[in-house]
Length: 98
Image 1 (spheres, one colour):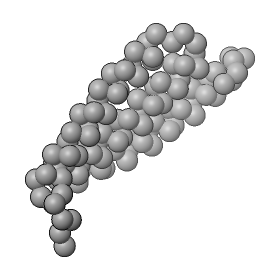
Image 2 (cartoon, rainbow, N blue to C red; image 1 turned 90 degrees about the vertical axis):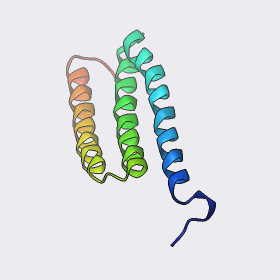
Image 3 (cartoon, rainbow, N blue to C red; image 1 turned 180 degrees about the vertical axis):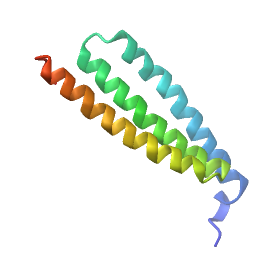
């Protein structure tokens, strides 16, 4: 089955280019994780960075044709979810409001 003009090496380059674009966006979000100004901003930025990392790993899996990247992405997504729950619980226990 062919995908038309986007088959073969051209499609792999698109996936790798999209992964590079997500890396640039991750750098911009990383600034918000450091600068804040509030705890909620930092929490949301770290969560977005985790999700962004999962997307980058999935795009690398498609672009490089390496299935093990998807395994790493799945594990990282589960860890990101648990981290979000733990930080939220910690913030609420301290008296903060999410």
